[in-house]
Length: 105
Image (cartoon, rainbow, N blue to C red):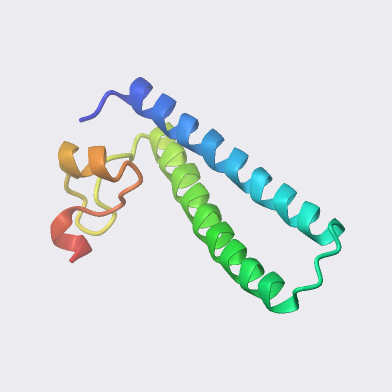
């Protein structure tokens, strides 16, 4: 199984990056709104892209928080479907994986 300390640091680092990205997107949104742009179509398109980015980032943030919780509970790296260990290679590629490859398919 993957080293828990290094994994925790990696997950926390990624979580911090995501939180910073979310803050930057929200800051950009406030700046655009205050900037008095008049191109409504452009504003709507930007808002749609921004919302999609935020949704993806918030989803990943939740997955990371769940992985950290599983680390704390001692259930990290165990498939939630079949109870077998999730291979290290899969966890390396997807550190918040909750299922082995067989169950994920």
